[in-house]
Length: 119
Image (cartoon, rainbow, N blue to C red; front, side, top):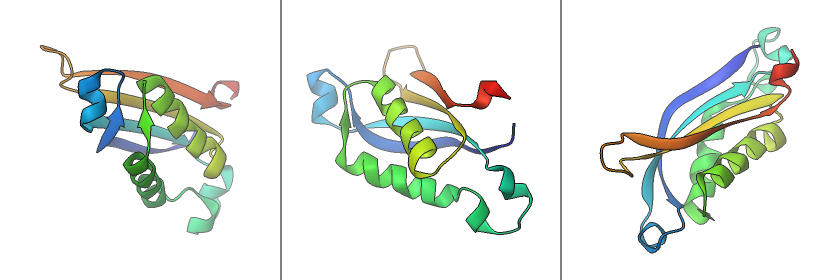
């Protein structure tokens, strides 16, 4: 299936359950695969696809005002934006905390929502 991708989007976010995580924003990395509407390849017009710049802007704005206890709920929220507000037919969202554990570069989750596996 066709997809738009945004890889290695790094943002500061308020995420975590521990007091130190609630006290300071931390760097996270998002990797997104966004199901592309079928019409996107048929028309040379942004109106028929998903504007990746708008996706990034929206995520940045949302992360500026929200706190998530878990990466799982953060990923679910982003997938909901993509499949709901942006009307993507499916989305795969990977979110990782960077440098959270000693000796581990990233820890995170990946979720998929929508009809990707139906094709």
